[in-house]
Length: 263
Image 1 (cartoon, rainbow, N blue to C red):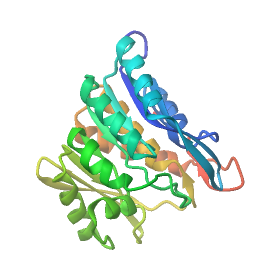
Image 2: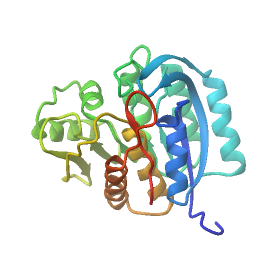
Image 3: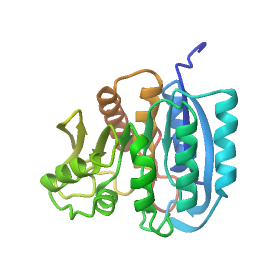
Image 4: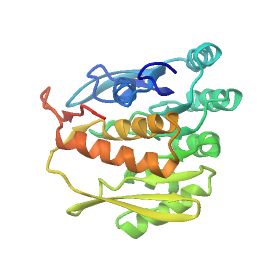
């Protein structure tokens, strides 16, 4: 690497025309952390800050071809997945990440938009568990995603911890269940790594609805891993970075605020 570029990170995810989530947010977060951003687009969405209107998947063979092209030329030091949309795309991505040396893989198991609309078809959660999690360094579900993936009801911090341990049985090196959907003055993210549970606690910020927080968090973790940081260090660094961005969230449109991540 030369100049300020300290690593290469690949995002395999959907496109958000507002730039608040998806590959656009991922690439901006990579850049903020001095990491060269690479991308493979899995879906095109029609959305704004108020919600998702519609989306169409990119064919799985074209998704795979994008990953192959990046890896044959530039390569990467870490990668993340976001919106995958269809079982066929999950399978194509799973084969790609096993065929290439991509470095640590962060799986952000996007099933719905923050505004509630479905961003997946069929039993995507089952496909993610079966095909992607065995190859993941980290999975970063929020509470609803963790509940769907694990089949557990999550209403308390103890439930959050139980889900993290349960998901680790599917093969990922570590599990981070973010706690923003649970009530309380504080937000607790639960990290399960090396057989130990860790609580990452922050103050609940009065920022209203904020778009793209999960994308920014998983992208920041991926960028830190691409720079060579240890996993727990990467998670804690990303948590602080995104908390700062939430506190400064911008009101650009008619709906949710958006993040401007700064290192």
